[in-house]
Image (tube, rainbow, N blue to C red; front, top):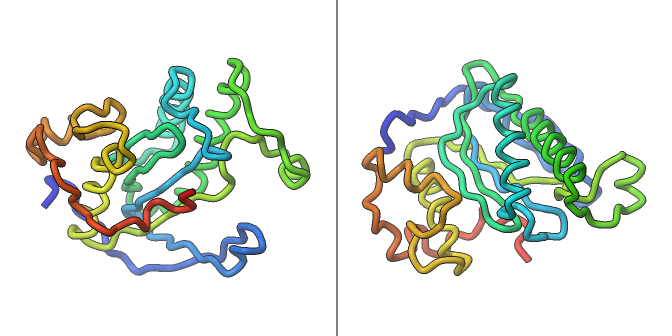
Amino acid sequence: MLVGLGVPRPTLRTRPTLLGNAMADYRRNFVPGGTYFFTVVAAGRRPILTTELGRACLHEAIDAVRTVFPFKLVATVLLPDHLHAVWTLPAGDDRYPLRWQRIKELFTRRYVSQGGQELPRSKSRRHKKERGVWQRRYWEHTVRDECELKKYVDYIHWNPRKHRLVQRVQDWPWSTFHRFVAQGEYDVDWGGTDPCPGFDTPEWNER
């Protein structure tokens, strides 16, 4: 069991979310005070997120949003072109789409103003006044119990090895792995083998 990471289990409800023609029937789960896993991807899967500018913009955006709309950042990993995260929202609060919208907006504003390049915008993006920095959609999964929580947290920390960015999990600097080591959840040499073999669902929109 992950220490101090109990998973709320209130009644589930859903809202329809229209995310383009191919996703017209997609419905997200909204659990007040719930725990969620996310995959969020840069537009065109460009490797911008682990650059010095990308890291600074993301850190600033998340800190700013958490000040106004708090959430617990349970675990996260930053890859060059995408990130994974597990959040727990405050009791009675299910507004994770608002938080991601604000994070993306703040990131984009600073990134572009500091010289970061964006992709050419489609007619649809121009019409909706969207910049070519993030993919419009993201993947979300409502974590239902401690077993699922452990699987997703392990997946997050194994991810740099999955993508062959490092030979040891401990060598990737942009994840919460070392915090978990300090808390006694992992040995520093954890991750010698894949903890979630065959589990690729979180790599939403993988190319």
